[in-house]
Length: 466
Ligand code: URP
Ligand code: ZN
Ligand code: ZN
Image (cartoon, rainbow, N blue to C red; front, top):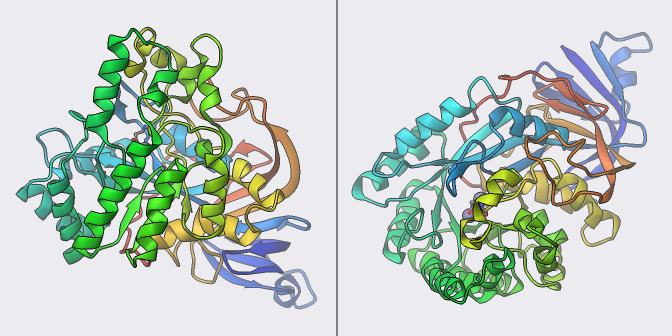
């Protein structure tokens, strides 16, 4: 199978130039100006498919390193499985996901991994990898970490200072896991919020009779994200290993990352579109609408997003992910009358590139930086670069042809996720994929999914290149 993408503007994390992209089977075979002419030698060359990309950008497929598909959480299960979640991702220009497998309570990491393989195999339409959530740091699970890194291609782990009784682990456990990555080269990802103190604030608010969704945010103040960030960054500094903070939401937490980086800590962090485009005022929407935005960390007061955009531009933040963790309104209503029972999480896997392209249009980040944040940097940090995250000979042909002028209005009616709302309903966006290719096959064309269930493959990831 030979496909030629002609006359587009190729955009990688570092370069922008007009060129053709030749794809042979699953790989990029060549990228260069005038390739079409050279290959046809004046006559008509044999291509199975030619895609005219004149006036469009040709970018490496998006990589979303933070999703929760088919995840039991908050008394229910996230609404997208590996079929609907990866279809939604592909339609929005994302061609690789890294989802979070979970160690079962009292069980082995390997059990959690096997169960996530089962959820994904035969369903995913794009390639995927797994991080491993460690909920019990024991001699056995620490030993298993080596195995996951060396043999299973699972080279990153998530630990939590939040959610006591569910995922919370103490500082000594975090420190032991960090130390372990010093031996095996893995990367610890941290959910940084002070869970035990948040639980006291929740208890106090409930005792006063507070029930509204806004109290989810008011009991999780940014200071407690900054405090937990500071603490885990200090632990990484003492352990002398890199660390990655997930879903960073607040200026105060960002300051801690910057402070650590200035001290020489190999500290990395991601933020998500919800923290760039939504804010605390969304919790005040009438009725129970505020529950749509219940996620952890919560949306912050206006002003934080400006700091996050600056952080993205200046490399204090390295990655944009989505934390796609969707629940339908029926599930959100589990918390009607008790904000602490609203399942935490919101959809976003399909809307990341649409939303963040607004940052390019408004001059907050450059076009190359947009590609870096959404594709190249996550590929590097999570051990996939070269295969994923760039357009170069030998790389997987995960390619998006992006029309920078195409306008449309985001709506649950046209998005592909299996959730009954989008936090961005009615927002007009500019820029959209005309074609999305996953390992050389067109999987999205003209906004329609044309790929095949089960075509996505598990990616055994390498070590971080950060
Ligand atoms: O609210 C969120 N973020 N739900 C998903 C679980 C997590 O902490 O990432
Ligand atoms: Zn988290
Ligand atoms: Zn998450």
